Each structure stands twice: as structure tokens, then as C-alpha cells.
Amino acid sequence: ITDCFAQGGSAVLAIGSRLELFVDEYLIDSRDGVSLRLHSPTAREIVMTYEDPWEGSGCGYQQVFRDGDIIRMYYTSQDLTDDAGTRLGRHPCYVCYAESADGIHWEKPNLGLFEYEGSKENNIVWAGPAVDNFTVYKDPNPACRAGEEYKAVASGAGGLLAYKSSDGLHWALLPPEPIITAGAFD
Image (cartoon, rainbow, N blue to C red; front, top):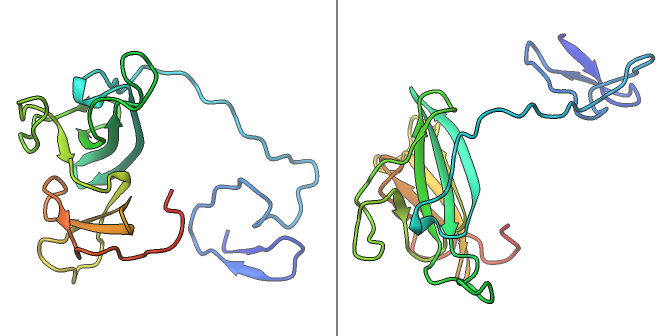
């Protein structure tokens, strides 16, 4: 496929040799005798469990991306409720890290970076302010500054905060103030 008509046939979009996932009719001019259908996922083995005490009763906002030979996963962990199920739990929200060679078998490395209940034997990579929706990516710009190869944003006091890391594990605020101050950052 080299060109596709936008819906209604009014404009040709050059998509080159890219593969396109047809989830709507944007790139489809007509579909006589053909239907769009999402297939149900196939259940497979469980690839990740969240059972460490610092992971609390709720882990979320998982992001996964390939980085060379490894696949990185970042996720937030927190106690969503206390033991009685009546209010937010005992510890703050953390950002945790796991890695995999194949995306099926995951390791949560003992990083020794942040203390949880007197021990640094855990996979926590950030325990500071602003962990809500902590979203990590590797900067593809070959001219990015040394020490800022990995970046993240997270909602915190005052707005959206930016973070930097040289290795994807050791994080620091990029500027000390929010980079965006208005909006919903979920």
C-alpha cells in the first residue's frame, strides 16, 4: 500500500511502506463485503504479579518499552486502602521497575535505591513527590544532553513535573518547577 484515501475519498494520504492497523475507517475508502472486528484476547500465562509489601494493594500505570536488548517496565505501587478498607493506605505511592528479555519472563531487580520499612532491598526507582502517572521514555534525540537520556513526566503539586535519568533507574527533577501548570494530567 502506498497511498490511501481518507474517509469520503476526499484526500490521498501517503503512508509509504508503513504497516497500518485498521481500527477505524480513517484510512478506508470503502469496505463492501468486509467488516472491522476486534478479536477477543487469548488468555495466556501470568507474566507479572504484584505481591511485594511496597507494592501495596494496587499497582498501575504500567509502561513497557524496548531498550536495546531489554524490555523495561515502570509502574506505580501504593496502598489503595488500609487493612480495614476504609481509607488510603500506610505508605506513599512509589515508582517501581521490572525488566525482561522477552516480555514474558520478568525480573524485579533489587536496586537498593529507596528505603521501605528499613530496607533498600526492593525495585523502587522513585519515591519522591509527584508519582501520579509517572510516564517514562527514552529520548531518541542523538543530541540530548548527557545524563538526560531517559525522561519522565508526572503530575504533582503545582502541575506537571519533568524528570531526567542517565540509566532509567536514578531519577532527578529536570527543572525544579512544573513544566505545565494548568490542565488535567491523567
